[in-house]
Length: 358
Length: 259
Image 1: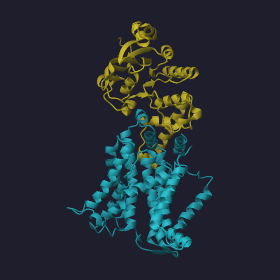
Image 2 (image 1 turned 90 degrees about the vertical axis):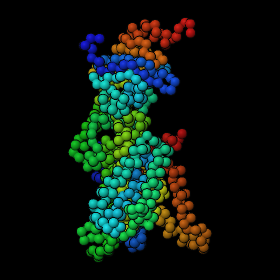
Image 3 (image 1 turned 180 degrees about the vertical axis):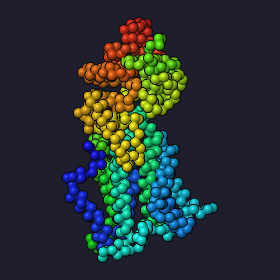
Image 4 (image 1 turned 90 degrees about the horizontal axis):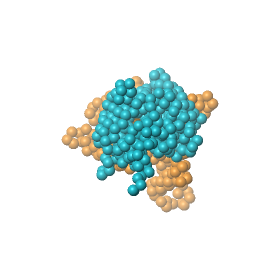
């Protein structure tokens, strides 16, 4: 039977899979040797992978351009912050809050989806962009008259995850290894990632997933084939949003602090860039895109300055400027030479080659 | 009309106006179960508009449609598909970047139920349903004769195969009435001949077919009854030999001497 996942077939590829698993398990300790900051950077990269996979349902599968995706990330983060911090004095365990956050984001996704059902392309992008901003501005202003979100000051002292005696906010020594907080989150995020990848793959190769792709390909024909396009599109928004909400909850716990500033338009654009650059529709392409775009700016942050010093002897260009310049250039070049993304879904690849050859 | 005649679709007084253009005016027609019913007329006569009204892509301004004994109210395309009317399009509308197989599998949507949770958990019933969808899609690809291209992208298939694939996708919804909008358009004589065999096969398998076609020879040879539209009005409805001799039809197609 054919698999849509592009998953390496288990039989022939046991060794590489095992090596990959070992590498991923060992990775945080190797990174910790360089600096705990790198474990944190990796954790954020994994969060962005989760977000990209969520957005991929909306943009990659169903073909609905969403420029306000970070709103659902924000919803999930704030749900976690409000239910696990001194702000309201509520301290629920994370395994209760994460599903609540995903559910609330799911509802928000449906609420956003409803007015956009008849829109396509540019118009859809503008409405979703507006929605993203509305959510952020809400968070910014919901401190008056009743203080719900604490406004621009944000919510601090958010509880870390706690599984039995294991506190994700502290370090534990086990078998001579130092399991720091970030390392624990890393393993948790990896589990979440595996779950989300499996769910994504299954959805894609299902009745619902085919309906999403059918809508992307030709909405009129999809309708005539008996697909209730309204409900199926809403479902895409809701599913994508719940992944965003889930990631948001984890973000709040890892960060320990949320404020509206974390959920600006730039973040939405970044997540979309990860999906597009990696290869819309292909789960592994999207993962590659997210990993690359999360690490590249960080690597440049640490290399731009020393390289300039070594080559020219003094700083010619402000590192922050140069960093974003190189980053932007890399994006432009990728899209110029690999318009369908680094690792495109086979369908998209052919589509884009056809367009490129015209 | 005798009680013995089994009417599948009864449309009466259908009207549709686009701004100042009366595209359909008081069109009434009856399609009997098991027949091939042709709808012909010069360009712009309103054939495709009638199709779009019937299949819910356009909302009609007036008139009633009763299908399989039940009224078809002002509905959306997917409910029409669920009621048992499937269609193809004049300018083929496949899901170009999906395989032939997937195209037909999409057609099974309306007859299957698995939701998000079934798919995420890969429940037993979901897997059984998926296997059923795949099996039926394979059968249909064989039926229309494009099984060799099951894993080709629809956009990469030949024109004739695309037409057939579109029919397979429509059949996947298990329609009672299959509405074909100019299926022979752009086909050569061989392809048209094969299409004719396919449509005759559909009839002998008990399906009712509504056929819009420009190829008069194909329509006259294939259809049990034919209706002619001209300027949005039905000018004639009868068996092919009678329609062919009708002066109004000749006038609509060829024009009068005084013109």
